[in-house]
Image (cartoon, rainbow, N blue to C red; front, side, top):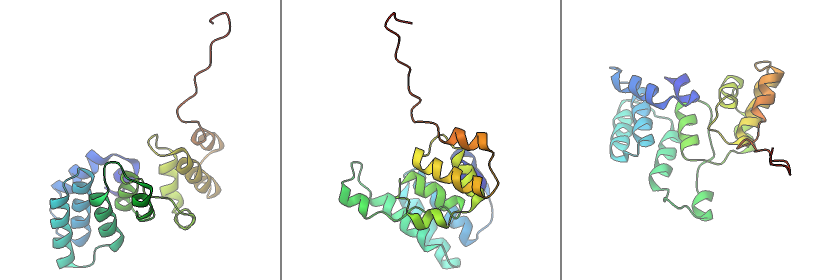
Length: 168
C-alpha cells in the first residue's frame, strides 16, 4: 500500500486499503487518506475519528486532510501560504502532499528518505523541481544511475522543435 501510494498508484492502493480487515490507527488513516483523495471528506473525517479512538494518528495527516477539505477551487496566494509543508515520510503523506500541491521546504527535502526520493524522481506527474531534487537525493545515495538522473531533468512539457524555414 505504501509503495503504491508513493508511486501514484492510488486506485490500487485504495482498493487494498478498503479490502483490508485490520482496524488499526494506520488503516483508519489510510482509509481517511483515500477518502480525502476522492473528495469524500465526511468519510475521511469519520475514519480519522475512529482511528483516533484506537490510538495515535499522525497529526500531519489530520492537518493535511483538513487543508485539502478547506482549500478553495481557485486558491489565493493567502490560501496557499496557509497550506502545510509537504511531507514525504510515508505513502500517506506523499499522496496527500502531491494531491494538495503543498509547498516543498528545504527541511522537507533534507529529511526525505532516498528510497522515496527515487520513486518521486521516476514519476511523470510531479513538478520538475520536485523531480530534480528527488533525483539528486536518490543519486547521491547511490540509488539512481546517471542516465536515470538525466531523465529526471527533462523539461515539462517536452519542447517542440520549430520547423525550419522550408517547413521541414
